[in-house]
Image (cartoon, rainbow, N blue to C red; front, side, top):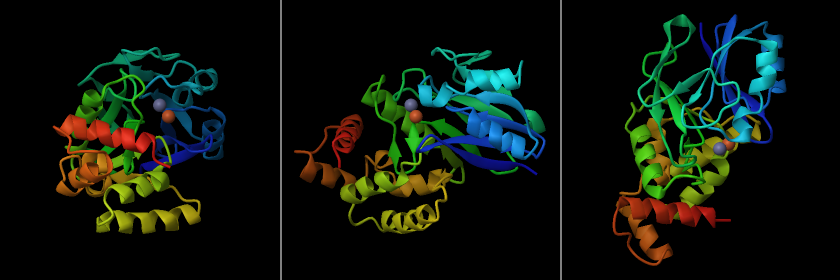
Length: 260
Ligand code: ZN
Ligand code: FE
């Protein structure tokens, strides 16, 4: 039986771990200690590391983990500098994990210019997506290196995945993201309900993740830039109706950057 578990790191990161009680893989280990503790407590052997982008809070644990588990593969974007990377990946590349699990690489530039996501349609846990800092629950990553056009395109590609896809992103930003989503769409009932669910989970210190693509399509303003309610809100709050989808996305992202 496979387990999918978010190992908390720093203040609001999750290091996703898939394991079968023997072998394990982790995604974006920004810190080694919480991973080593988790593996040790369960006598798990680390078999590989998946990396979505080069930011320090996603890669700083790689080298210490390689000291503990030498020779394991480190899969990461070909177009970024990743410490210890053994496999540089491009759009469409496949990686095979244990258990016959195969992931495909999606290039999702925007947060960084080489950012990738890992997607597997057929797993015992259903379709799985590891998307780093591209798609968050009810939000998306900041544009540090890419353009609004790139990020919009990346998010559209993720939104087109099957609705049941479990969305495993790296940060617990959901509460703040939902506050913004409510400001954008005060009349959206799905956002209100999601906010109540997340408030309950967070009060018990439980993760708000994974989310699903289906839920994100209903509550994530950055996937809803064509919705009449979102456009009307942009018209009222951001000084006019955007000329197209990309402008709509860019205006929304700017509004969020300044949202308290
Ligand atoms: Zn990042
Ligand atoms: Fe991050």
